[in-house]
Length: 309
Image (cartoon, rainbow, N blue to C red):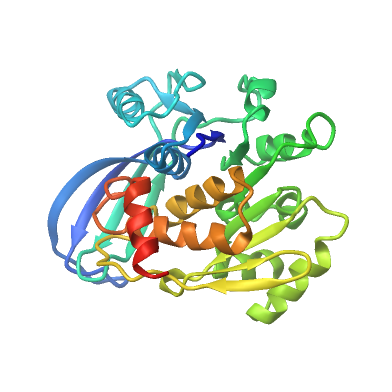
């Protein structure tokens, strides 16, 4: 299998995971059965997933120069992620406290923002854009706007993949215009409905296809949880069902799914094939607690795909 070169720009995070008997309602309590720590951050999760699948993943990010940042750097390098573009600065490392319902695997994330890549940080644009696929997953709005505008002027052949989580969460005024600058975008059904102020899946499909002519966007891929995903291009759309696995923790499943999409994009697979592969990667990532603990190898993905031809 040919090894693809995929660049990722975005976040690295130190996760503290609280394992609870249930997710508490406001004003109620829950029992902590265990506290653990794990590497995380949406972009780092995707980079590690790609490395385990056998691709060359280059991560451009910023972490703190504290012990947590040094540990994260060491663990990323151990996973085979190319960290030559990653820098450490004199800020605390980005952190999250994750509340996990041990019975269902559902979680709530509390984010303490720390060191992260921002507009003004040095990026070797020529080197980044020379990769087969570029994943842009940063929280900094000005940097995302700058990087999504560049390919039209410098490298129109660059294939940009954009998870839309931060675009939606930031409530950016030109969020739709920015999203449609990508070659491909991924996100949950709730995120897409919020982005486009759509009222149903049918309305969502119609709006996306209506906006695609004249924009860069070639495909929008909508995750539907255990139900799989929906892919939409200019002329058609389709559903790919999910895979049933024993789920322990859904944290990072969307990041693993994005890695599967990047893997298929780099190989120019049809959207149906790409989405089926991404569904398998995302499903397998939920088998253990922590965003990176259960990220699968290519062999594990192949076994799952072959189990349901």
